[in-house]
Every structure is written in structure tokens, then in C-alpha cells.
Length: 162
Image (tube, rainbow, N blue to C red; front, top):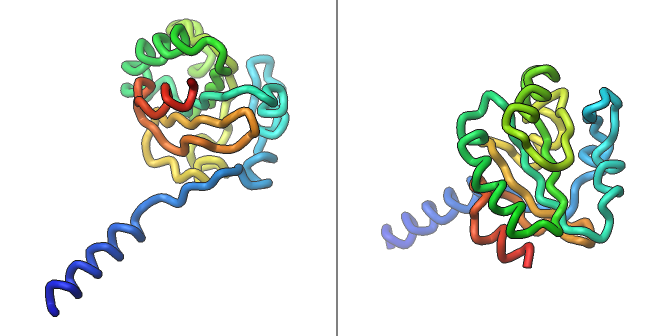
């Protein structure tokens, strides 16, 4: 009897610590403002609406993030293998200058936006960003198909982009 109670307790703790996976971004997330390369403010809603009907790979990253930079060759390989997807980079950099320098230095190809509140913003809280890089896949219907991956060569990404 004691072992059954222990197992139930462990299962409860394990499942309560898992992240909530959502299929759609909330209205607050969609309204959150980012900055484009020209310095204009734009909502996530407007960013995503540009790519309706397409699959989107979202990469939350920062120039100060060692894992993000080390992972760029894997991301570049994914872009070569799956060129039909849109690659949307959301930077959690500390300032716009560092963000822009990193894009240039590492020649990161894709759509780029700066997150003024970094991972502590509305999106960061909504998807519970506790590590970057963070990859998500939004399908052609605008639904979040992959909520969390930390490697660009994650097999789930490739499977969903087929």
C-alpha cells in the first residue's frame, strides 16, 4: 500500500512540473510589440500574419547565448534542408546594437525581431522560456505544433516540416 502511494506521489509531482503546451498564442502574446531591423514596432500578430499558410520556425535566441551561437550551423543546415519554411528569429538580446551586430557577424538568414522585454516578456512567460535557444514550429494554420526544442537538429522539427 505504501508503494502505491509513493508511486502516485511521484507521478503527481512529475506531471505537475511539466510545461503546459498550448496550440495557439494568447491575445496578449499576439499583441506584444517587437522591434524590426528598421526600428519600427510591430506586434507578433502582424509578424505572423505576413506568413499565413506557411510553416514557421521560431528561434528565440540572443547574441550572448553560447548555445545559440554554437547551434547556428545546425540551424543553417536545417534552412538548407527545409528552405520552404519561414525562419523567424526573436532576439532576447540586452540591446539593439548587440542584436544587429550578431546578425551581421554570424550572417543569420531569416526574419529578425528584437524582444524589448527579452524572455521575461509576455511570450517568454506564455511559453515558459527557461532556456535558449528555444525553437517552436507554427504550422500553416497558425497553430503551435512544436512547443519546445532546444536543438535545431531535433528530429521533431524535421518531421513537422515534411
